[in-house]
Length: 467
Image (cartoon, rainbow, N blue to C red; front, side, top):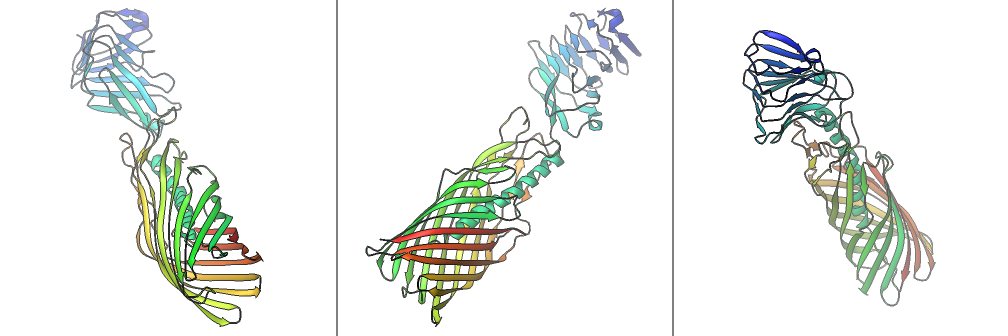
């Protein structure tokens, strides 16, 4: 039994054979670089301080620490100290780590190993250290049947900020997809030939302002059939060609096109009188999200699918107010939703605490109203424009939520805390009749979006043939 206090220099002794029990209230500190003979088992009722010993501490027998015992160990980022026990380890009481300076990294470090058949029993009741003086990383203990680990995890505040930053980038992606969906409801094909068929091909580019240069270019195919002068039905396919997203926090795949359908009834074919049009579309994009590092946060990355779908009904009435001029007030309603499924980040050498995310779902029911106008400049050239207001009557904006059991305190990020519910929109364009039943058109669309200070601009060019 060791009573009172004392320091045993293992360099001087080289091999020590007498230590068996440390009494309550007593302290034994080991120093030097020698070893304890393999035959020794230690029972610690007091303080067993090995922080100043060079290298690991090896016990050839067992190790038992009671509820009054305290184990003091050293820890450094270059070489963490280990207590290696050939037999069983029975743990209680406290563990204190005396850390030194350096650069600490997130990860799992073994500090005690019990290699006997019986393995490890119990846990330390408390952990104290001076690690907060050297690193912002969070830390705690983890256990398995044989080992005790010190686990470093990213700082909660840094990880939370990484979620906020990622949510901001995702807002731009959701804005892009929703704008593409809403604009597609205006797609049409009205240059019919003798067989009542219209085919239109073209391209579209949509840019999201205030979103780090986010823009998307797509190819477009529209087809329609007119079985009767007063109504037409059609479909369209829009295929992503490229998505430019500076920073690459979120990458969209280009493998799946947007698909839409429409049907319209018109009182007169010349654009005057009443018209009602119904449109619906669905799109799916493979999505990879990689968090940008903030302080101690990790570059966690995972994949999901972003699905966009919706429908719109719009009615207008064209008034021939002057020669070659038609004014068309319109009103309608639209429903859109954008849903990204939950996912879990992958583990890697740089990601030790991957986050698991809940699904991120948004939807909106929107009332539309405005007025359009067209003017035939010359027989082969017509210009058109419109201005309107969109007002959300019902919305669900969702939240971006990531969790990991090792990082407590993470909170969901409101995906749109201050939505813009009433927004302007405008369209400007022209088309040129190249020849009979052949038309070249250019259209520009501006939209204020539901996120503060975020607008989109779209430019589209089409070539239409009637068959």
